[in-house]
Length: 222
Image (cartoon, rainbow, N blue to C red; front, side, top):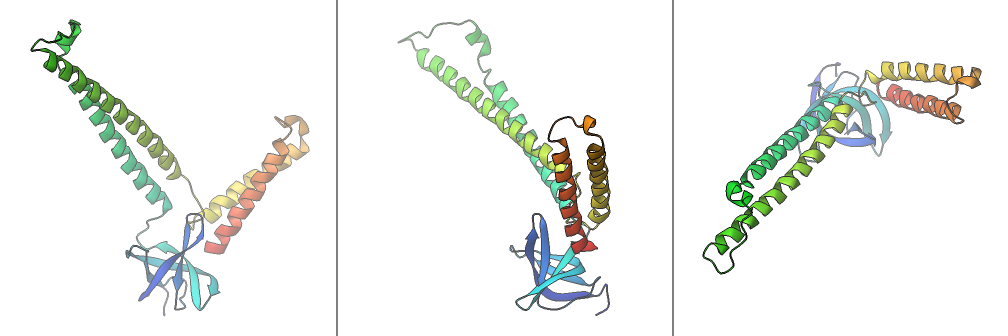
């Protein structure tokens, strides 16, 4: 099969590392082949084959990218937008409940006592109860809006990050590793520049972290 050729043989996703899925295939493919990969929910995505990562149990496991360019950054961005929409809707409902809780505000502002036994007693108590419940709902919706907003901010930040699920991560982690190594060497050579006793240890951990990330990225896309 020539690279770039579309193959309709069904394949499935297989988790390889956090946020990284390979295509588990019965057939052998070449780099550049376009294959269809099915999710566990039955959705099929056209994907481009990159590297053969390993073979196991008669199956071939390939690193892939979506043919339509959709990746983890785009997924995070859409999730952030969806959560922001939830937050906006909850805030809108909160405002509506708050406005409704002002029913009879002019009357209640007079602080008239409930006239026990009077024909107005039932209406007076019902008005207070309605407004109390509405205010409670307003507060609850405000809390929902705040929670959704925080989650939206988290996923918005994620949408700006590069990770090993993308081919361009090789160059990115090469750069991050170089930065980490320079910082580690600088702190090693200049003890007086360490802000605390663990500065050198943390710098070394960053070097090891980016070495690991670069190794994974190279395995997938190098």
